[in-house]
Length: 93
Length: 120
Length: 132
Image (cartoon, rainbow over all chains, first blue to last red; front, side, top):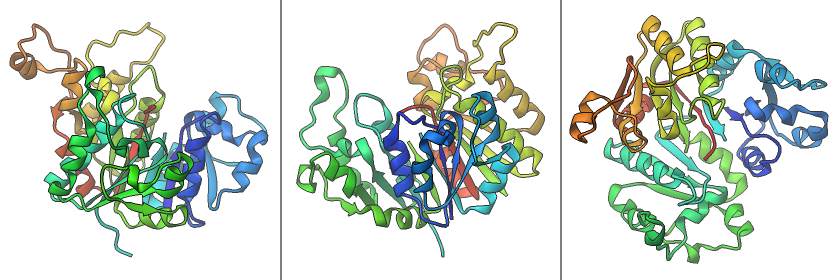
């Protein structure tokens, strides 16, 4: 059970694809910083191919005006809880 | 499931940034502190292991020299992503060291085997 | 739970340092302990005492200092990465014969061994990156 964080915008597809290939269905992905643009409807197919659960950091979603996302948003304390509930954290940047 | 040791994951090509060297330094330090360490070369990180580097013209130290000393430091595992090699037209013969080639399907397990994963 | 944080993102140019700072505050708010914050690569610039910002902007280095003062945080800047980037303390200024130094209070310079020790001592290690 690994929490993966991803902070790269959609132009960096390699980063997204590598994070995806390293995940299994028990893992979760947390989109942070520019990574939250992946939450836009245009990328819903790519997000749907992720084996585990997907979250986005609320502050980054709001800051960037990324609306229309059906993703589960979490605040900083939710980020902490995800770190606790997963065995380790792997950062993709 | 007992996970132990540190996995250092490096995804950047050498010389264009300091990432390759910084990842190596961290791995060598793990070994000095007798922590089991695995280096995982992913994406453009596989370029770090190409043979025949000669960066003196660009005023940098040759990474190959440090890499060849890795076995002396008891760095137990050097893992390279098969899909990263394949998509770059590279094979293990192109690399400076013998490595463990890891398929995409084995990546999640490799990460979960280690107590911590450091991306550098 | 015991956490350590690795900051590889510089302030200003990348958001990662600010994300790390917010994460550190959230950890402390939730009652977790932070064994160490380790600054590596361009993340060492978080330890500069000479950052100057317009009044309506937030200084990340000062925020780290304030958090460290309040919670007695161990803020360790990788010495090898720091001296290469011109971030030095009085001791290193003497050693390299430099007239000035700029490491902010609350930060200390130490080796990569402190990163490894943080991994050994911590239940979770969370890295905040910039770009490679």
